[in-house]
Image (cartoon, rainbow, N blue to C red; front, side, top):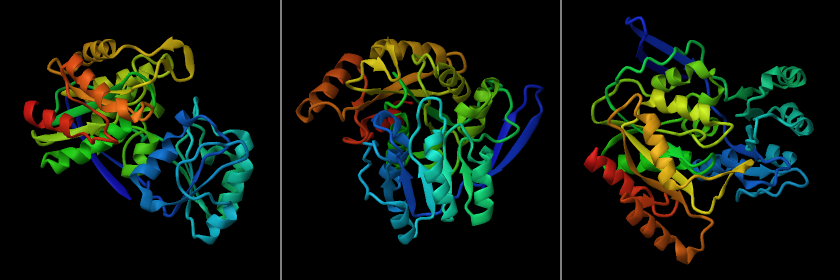
Length: 358
């Protein structure tokens, strides 16, 4: 059981405290289910868990036609049962977040085997009658991560104590979660008080707590962000996982609500070095980094007039290895900001900039 005490000022001016309880304890070991998906951009849940919680993962399972390989042993459901797998995690996050109907049979098999089913999709496991009946019979738990707590208020916009850094980006799936996790770890290593604040299903599975803000009614997204990063010590940093992008025609709304509620003191711009088009929207081009920086700063000024950019976190995994260092050096010189790939170089230069200049 995770207990979160989240103080906030209501718009009527009364001091109040909202206590939320949510159980997100997942039983290890995990089997990551990748379905029959062949687009790597939709595998961020499974890959994120493998990268940040490798000791909890027993293997992966794919259907015929599925080409995504997250680098762990391939297991059938029978083999997973033999290995004592306790959680069947749906590792794919397709556009729209719905569970494909043709996946139902394999999910049902896992339920009947008594394995917990964990989903971060918008379609809820508990709302599928056959799953609910089978789970009651087998003792399997149906765990829907993307369910926000009740009682989220409208954002107040009032200044809170403590400091906040928000990951923003040129598109979805460019490394905002990885950047936040790496930055939290690096800040802590430098002796800076820092807490990772999960705002999406994968981050919640990794951290064990958070709010999936893209499942919050839009009027209350900024309020949810305020709850995620309440008043804190003046030298404490909340490192807030970003969602979507101001430039994504489908998900810009959640990005804006999260930004206004976060009241970020610092922004980290996240980008995938070779990306040219918005994922899933081929008629929309990726903005330039200068355009991305300007737009995010302009929007963030509404709730924090002192916001600044702390650095650029770049996914260089698709660049030739011998070009990566020069790319980052040139970008740092052009933007006059620290730049790094958190999965190759770590986040040291950005963390030091936050520690020393904010």
